[in-house]
Image (cartoon, rainbow, N blue to C red):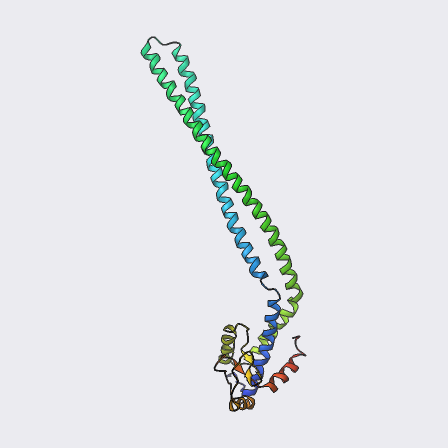
Length: 259
């Protein structure tokens, strides 16, 4: 059996749209009370993540350079062992040629030790600098995490204060949206998303759409009051309803939501 489509009048559509606007505007107010806090929390989390990655990079580099230092220590130990061996052999040489050959080997190993010591000093300086930078990074991360904790707590408190109302309004928004056909609902969301104030449906104030300085001609105002068709303001792009409907729907919605 085909689903029966219930046709509603233009006036009913306008009322449903304006009611939905009231609900969505209240949701906007609730979210605006949180101000920049959600963005601040996200920015802090991103900054901490970046600093932690940088910190990990420094820790890896320090480990690699400490490994290099240990390698140089092994080179020095091996060279010292060889020097001891060659000096012992010098005591038992049979001629000057062997003595000089061993002396050259000793001299070479001494140069190896000097070079290793030089490299160890260079690595030591780099390690010291990186450890100092790493310490500063960890301090900064600690401070930011503490700050993030306070911001998260502040945000959680704000959310908890309005969570029940927000959940209730989200459900009401969904309920009221079902009263509007898909094409008109899509237009409502498109207009709302393109508006800085989040307003897609507005009444008239002194003959001009709310938030606009362009007064509508009397004929256009009369058409709006007749509620026979959906009228969109050519300047602001918003759907227009008359003052009487605005007052009626505001009064009706007071029993449903707080605004």
